Structures are given as structure tokens and as C-alpha cells.
Image (cartoon, rainbow, N blue to C red; front, top):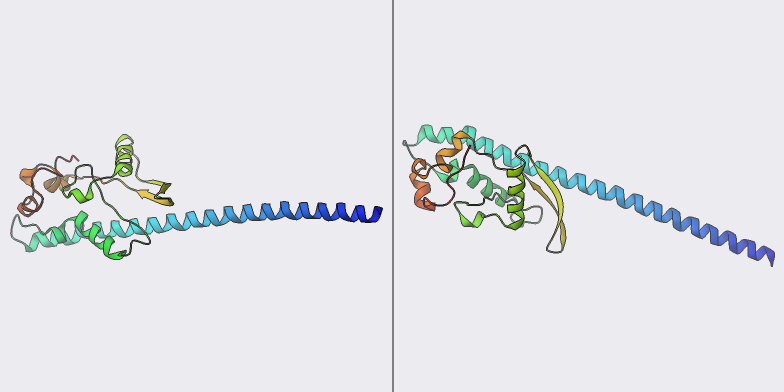
Length: 189
């Protein structure tokens, strides 16, 4: 009888040790997989942003100057010379099913109302405005019942941007004809 009692105690202790080891293993595996997932998601976001930056740089530094050299003075082809238009189009074509990422380039008073910032994006714009040195923002958020990774960068206007985004009188005629002279202007360097 004493032998059976010792065996039961030993079995119970072994079960407790196995459960504790299982919980430790499960927790460490969960943590490792979560860290790996977060790293992969952040790497994909960096890749998307590097593609966006490459397209914007090409349009701004190569395509737009070539277009100005080959077009009549004052001419402007939005589909080839606007970094916003081109990057939105390229990124939407790259991810037609919207299953990997959603790329949005938004503003508080955009020319095209379709690209107006939603509440979360307004919050991010306010954060970038309050912290002028902040170059990017990354965070996980709950949206529509799913956890999503948000990666945002501010749009910075340089002097060369202001011909289209500053005073409406300086904007290309094609832009005014398409969008009017009220929205999307008044930006500052």
C-alpha cells in the first residue's frame, strides 16, 4: 500500500513537472513566433515603403524633368509627373486584392476628396505635426476585429512641391481644370 502511495505521488509530481515544462515551452514558442511575425511584418512594411520611395524619386528626379524638357512650357501630365498620383496607382496595381497591405497617401485637405484622412490618419498627421523630427510611426492596432500593423511616414513638402501645392495661381492649368483651385493648396515648405 505504501508502494502504491509513493508511486501515485511520483506520478502526480511528474505530471505537474510535465505541465509546467509544457507551459514554459508553449509560452516561449508563442513569444518566439510572435517576435518572428512582427519582424517579418515590419520588414514587409519597410520593403513597401522603399518601393514607394523609389517610385517617388524616379518620378521627381528623372521622369518629371524629362517631361518638362519635352513638353510645351506650362504643360503638366498628372499621370506622369505627380508623385502622389503615380505612387497611388503603382501601389494599387501591385496589390489589387488588398490582401497583403493597404497603401494610402492621405491629407487633411486633399485635392481629391477620396484621399481625405480618416480619424486614425488624422491622429497620425497630428502626431507628425506635433513632433516635427518624427520620421516614421509603427504600431499594432485593432481594426475591424483584426490586429493590423500600421506603418506611417509624413509627407514633406519641399520648395519644388509648392508650384502645385502652394498658391493656386502657380499651379498647372490641367491640375486646376481637374481639381479646382480650392482644395489641396496652401501647403508650406
